[in-house]
Image 1 (tube, rainbow, N blue to C red):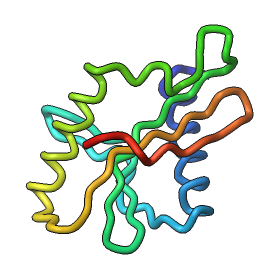
Image 2: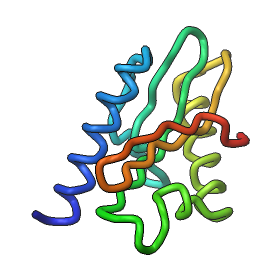
Image 3: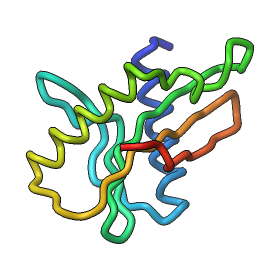
Image 4: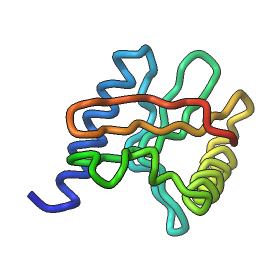
Amino acid sequence: MSNYAVGHDAEKRAAKHLESLGLKIRELNWKTRYCEIDIVAQKDKAVYFVEVKYRRNTKQGSGTDYITPRKLRQMRFAAEMWVQNHQWLDDCRLAVVSIDADQISFIDDILL
């Protein structure tokens, strides 16, 4: 299976997990020529910009270990673009779904 297919499967798994937590999936793989967001989800009046990180195993760390300061800047930039394009006025949050082997976790407390 190609890296693209593995990543796409992980994103679909992450979306199902978010739905099980009561979030509504607004968009998968939202892209512009400048940035992309894996998942845009919403719960009540908050929109979540979700980065999906998949690791087959945790020998080299978990998915959340790969959210670097640079990645956070990219996530913020993409979130700001989405907010502007959609004229969103309510709450915004950066989040991560980490899929490590068969364990899945949702971290929605990342600073915007």
